[in-house]
Structure formats: structure tokens, C-alpha cells
Image (cartoon, rainbow, N blue to C red; front, side):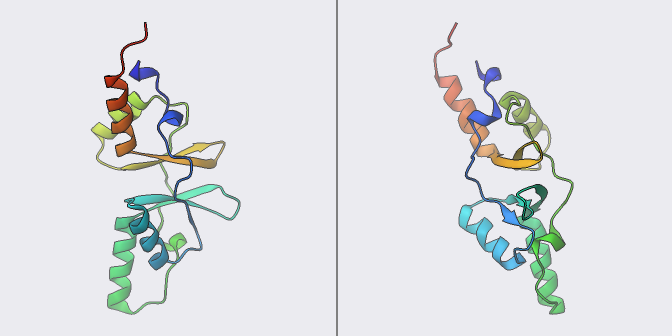
Length: 138
């Protein structure tokens, strides 16, 4: 049954993570390369400390192009108030939250303060479609 599928079954474990010391330009390049609208930010100990989105980076790059400011790091533009999910959360509950709230499109999956992966809207859609097409196991 779909309601029993956990986030851990649909998430990416080898996901993009960006260090706080990464330059804004490099972070933007990484998001483009990985085709992600945002990514979790970790410190040197691998702890989840923030989230950076295309919007955050776009705003900073635009501001710096007008003001010729020095290069910023992800730490300067990231959001520290990160909404995370547990690997044991239900994908149905997460899908309902994502349907109700337009943002974020990517959720970091954390366990014990450590980033263990991400789950995107696309991955949730895929899990829901795959599960719907499988016969019910009663």
C-alpha cells in the first residue's frame, strides 16, 4: 500500500550537498549540473546547517553584478531554517504537504542531525505512480 512507503524507499542517498565554504558561483554551477532547484548545505563535519536555492543564488549574483561586491560563499546566502524530513516519514504525508505548500521542491532527509539524502517532488511522483501500478498485496 502506498501509505506504507517510507521516504527512505524513494529518496536519493548520493545527493548533492554543498559546503558552507562553496562560492555562490560554484554552487549555482552545481545546481545547474545536477538539475536541482536547491540543495542542502553542510558544514565540515557533515552536519546539515542550511539550504540554498536557485532563488538565493540568483539574487546574490544579481546584487553582486550591480555592486561589484566580492565573491560570497553559500554561508552568506543560505537559509538556516531548513525543513527536513525523516527517512521513516510516509511519502503520502510528505506528498500531501508538498501539494499544500508550493515550496520547497526538495527536502533534505536527515537522521540525527546528519544529512542522509534528499527527496524531490519528482521522486515522490515516481513512487506514487510506481506503487499505483503494482497490484495490491493483501
